[in-house]
Length: 420
Image (cartoon, rainbow, N blue to C red; front, top):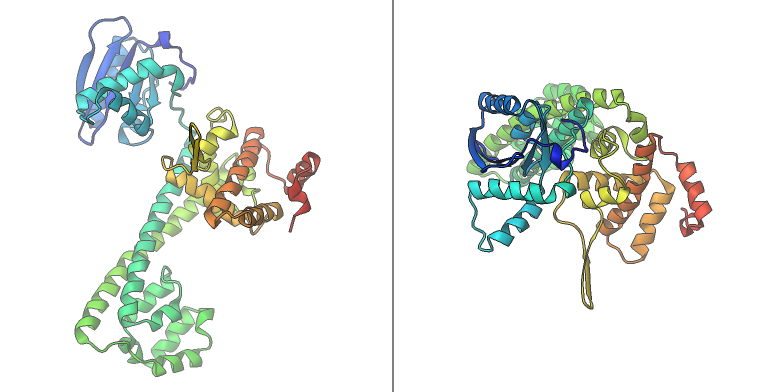
């Protein structure tokens, strides 16, 4: 069901769903009254479909509210197929605190969690927001950008392992290659995992490789060949060299398909991003580019009613600080419970904007001058950027630096006077 505003009285039933990999436990309360029902459901498409169709027939297609501790995943994607389900994602941390109010010891079972989720939904439906999926193009970008980041993290882990191995047996390769997550580096290490292997190579072989993999870092061919012949091996221990050779080739073999996958991801993200109706809004942001532009678009989504004001997104993303005050004490700290990839997106964009936006650089330097550390200054800048992008997103208008600077002048902002 796609209607955001569904009254409490319109539901035929309410359900608390405690999900698991193999089985789900559900606690169901019919709106007509009567005892609660407990259902144990297998995590298979057939079992979920059969159960959903039974509910549709039982209540003649009337809406059914379901509370669960996730907003994405296999069970969510399966339930979204049915238009009469209204899903209410419950924050796991909030539900954990709710559970402790009943079970201070921390004891829990699937059955009690399902029942407590049902109670949570019945008590707080007015405070919960039904899940409103973005349009298919936006959801594709969201999943692809997150998937790409996971591949980048895997690539980083492999290059860190490669770096560690090369430091033990072939440190010169780190100077010559510099960037290990590249096809030229993979080709190089596949042929010459150690300095001894490289020094045995024929000049003709080196010339051919040099021509096929041009890199400015290597300088002239003659200079590179001279460096190879003059280089001294860090170690001649045959046991270490054998182990390092095997490991370097194994890591290179894992890195190459990751690089190919990243290329495919980049191409598909580029296609979807350029076709998206909000492309011009996010592409206009200084420093967004082809990588951060799609991530920012995914962060805001296509549902303009999801956030009523910029403050909601600032808090949800983890950019807004948390204030804890009691009596005479007041402690301000950053948020630990938030979507990490979302916070990372705003953080990385703000860091990039410093190089493309005059006011952003000035504001960042101002924060640094006031004693803020690098990350604190970047988060403060991200806080401002969210307000700006939120307005552009709501109004469906691209960002214009000149217009924003003019608004700063009208407000008499000191930032204008300090522009660098």
